[in-house]
Length: 336
Image (tube, rainbow, N blue to C red; front, side, top):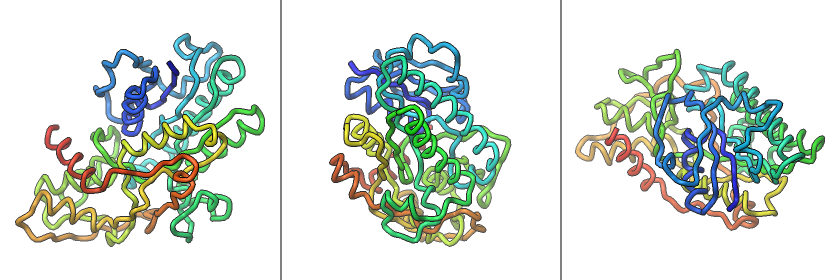
């Protein structure tokens, strides 16, 4: 039975990763400090092949490797201070500083496990925001070599994730795979803990990603619906199950070693189209109406990936449609 470590195992994408790998027969060790949502129960917690170590990923770098990690074969670095666009604008410095500390500690551990123990590869989660300044759509992985670097601290920090991979590979021969998920959607996002309280119209934002905030505002009766900016921003909303499956396929493929992949649906949807989809499900008898709030500085207008590389090398294609994802999240939020 292969044994893997997932940092940030109790988070949004982390919980999808745990479910995917446990279902496929892996032994999973998770690390999390519950800093985003507070103590939270996940479906995978009771699985017999799951072990949770409650600790801050910043403390991973230590003189002695915890016994539970000595025979880890793969490390998936999913721990990060992360949220939606409001979150990364409000925590511009904290996000940069915290995530750099997490990265350094995680890579220090990976280098040690690879040199002295059984680690075969580190898999890191970058972001579509590394392409913040691209003008090439759909955007291939190779565009990272030619487009201007991100201006937002979030995008810059995600680019740094990729440079950690390159540095550790060049100096320590640490094998890696870089994953760029595009706009993960699904169940499991909660109200983020933090010092900032931001309202969209009369409703307090969850400080999560766009879909749960849209659903929350509509469920609470906001009319007209407040939308950030024009609503014409295009994103490729990819279900967490698809992203987790794509990451597993990367881990299981030797051809993915020292490579980067866009893991996403190629289907673009504007924020306005997404909002109307949610509205028509929740308010079928009320005409859709919206009002634009001022846009944030780094609210990129278009993020559309080229996914040919993942399809050709891994055989990966996203399978879950947007409406199915929206219905899933609505049902999850109704039960909260």
